[in-house]
Image (tube, rainbow, N blue to C red; front, side, top):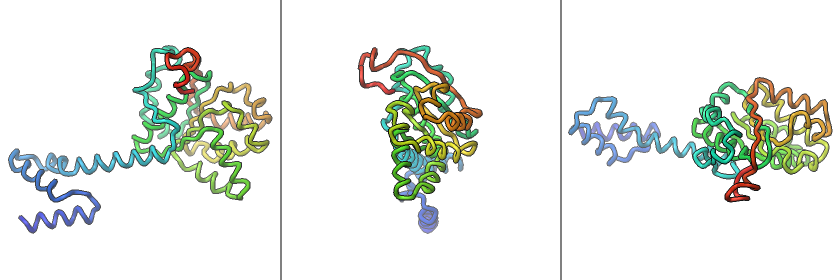
Length: 256
């Protein structure tokens, strides 16, 4: 039995399963006392290290996504704007099925109603489900792409942003970065959307209505081409409600 125990520990080490000898001994002792079925024994033996590895992987995906804040749906105030969001629809989105289907998700609505909170919560749920997520504000995304023009690394950055299974572009239209970055900003955004079109899911959060995109980007035809690729088969939520910052009990602390 001692030799068999050592062989099993060696197998775990070879397979890269972090199982200390005392953990094996503890489960073996419990199995003998309780006459555990084989599958129950394996579950109790491998369950804890598997759960620990899963938690580390989720934490890594959340860290790599670079969310602005650690937002959760549990921390969202559903009562403040009860008609702004369909809670059942949002909870359905937490399953990540739209990512599996490579469908886009678009939030269009007034500033301050909680769009950013919701989208970051959905992004973190996607990380839990095993999806690779990238979160950027529109300002940060376009600043990165504009900088890549200067050092001639734009193709690499386009490939980088085309890889995540879910790319979240938050605050589109919030601080006019799309225009202040220069006339090429709209074309840079189009490159990302076109590279992901029907291959990966893109979530976009904006307070600019679709019919104003042409004026906002100073390029009507390009705005239409961008919209065509974003809205094709997309889930579109148009949101109206009071601003947390203007009316909330903790004004200034709620998301956009």
